[in-house]
Length: 60
Image 1 (cartoon, rainbow, N blue to C red):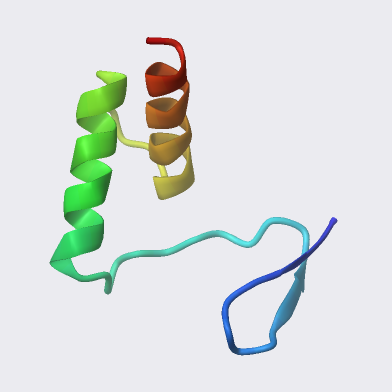
Image 2 (tube, rainbow, N blue to C red; image 1 turned 90 degrees about the vertical axis):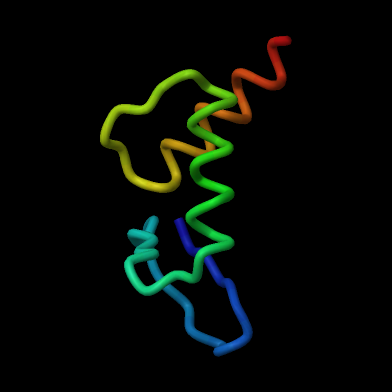
């Protein structure tokens, strides 16, 4: 699958890993809310955390 994103013009083949180690406090707060919404606080990558929250909120 071909994916494009951001404003850099970079194109990646496949699903590149999203890394937020250097992310600011707002991203960490959003991910904490996602964990609270899904009820799952296990160690997962950011995409899994947001997907779980989306599923939980959609099924309410």
